[in-house]
Length: 87
Image (cartoon, rainbow, N blue to C red; front, side, top):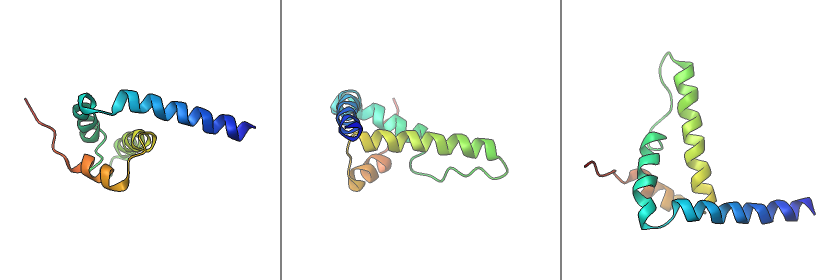
């Protein structure tokens, strides 16, 4: 029973993530998060374990969002390789 409830709430949570982060209006936000979370680069900061830990945490957030959006590996790669337009 707990497993069924967990699966149901995961579906609801996934739907909520899609409402926020899916669609054309969300594309610039996803690109910004990809940059901010350093999804395209290694999180290691030589000599600074605290900064490395912060960057690892940012990447975890990026991957959590991608997981709840049910993005394929190809879609994640495309998102990470898109350059954000600077105004």
